[in-house]
Picture 1: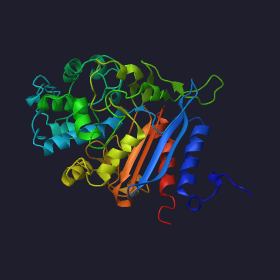
Picture 2 (picture 1 turned 135 degrees about the vertical axis):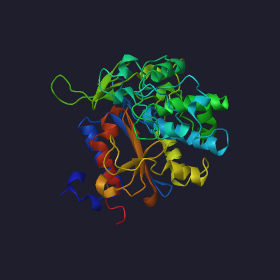
Picture 3 (picture 1 turned 180 degrees about the vertical axis):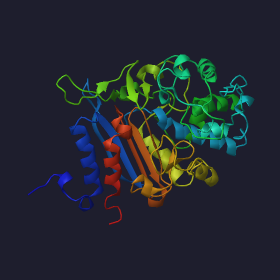
Picture 4 (picture 1 turned 90 degrees about the vertical axis):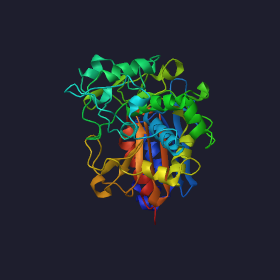
Length: 395
């Protein structure tokens, strides 16, 4: 008798069978339209698969070299750029951002405008927020602040003006709030070096790691995935809806506002927190460099600083057991997090439907880029994939 993979004890299956099962179920249940999943252990690929459709309406199949809009998968790239520039002595992470953006002086409720350092922007300890992280009617709505993946054609000067008119949620370095800090940081890095942020990413990250497909422009539009959001068909069944400019998705107390066409508008500012596009293979190259202590990119102490919790758990807005480093969350307490991942695991995702993690203790790097939000970022698939990777790992 041949049992379905889901009916066989997980530890008895090969990693390929387990991950295939998690991916196949998500596709069959129409929680995902398509995905590329890559798993490496100790630097060796142990799983790689493209599944489902890159574009459902044209019946274009997913391929391993499909290009996705990365959303917050951008953050570790830009964080690595900042640390590299600090290594080179071209910036001081503890300097105030006003050194390079003198007009950017958001105020606290009492009317004071405290200095914000580059390091505080990097660690989301600046007091800034995201529009999608605020309830309807906030000052972020009033000033129509862009979250970096909406409002095609908006330039950075205008978005900094809008953001600078909002109220700081707390005094810098007294709390944590996920924010547009990396968008501000990205422009500060460009001003400090006289080099546009896309060029910095290309020179300091993409070129050293031989990335062909990742940056602030799409390398090949024929390979760009269509993107989808959770939805229900007319018959009541689950059917992800194709995104278009202006698509919205409820997110806790806020709203995610999407514009997949933003990246095609050359006037759109290069969002350091959400503006890049790329392939799963290129993302894995970055993760592997960080897992190996910096690899070709960073000095070991710089890579270590990315992967250490600058705000320890617990953090409001993050799952229990997770702190935050530079560019992603850091696992501080696996028991509190109820996860098989090891302490020190570095992980994050992206609101177009992505998740990834590095577990340095177990030698693991895992990338799952999907074209379906929010299932591919925070849905059941992410838990099933994680558990499939760890089940029987040391058997």
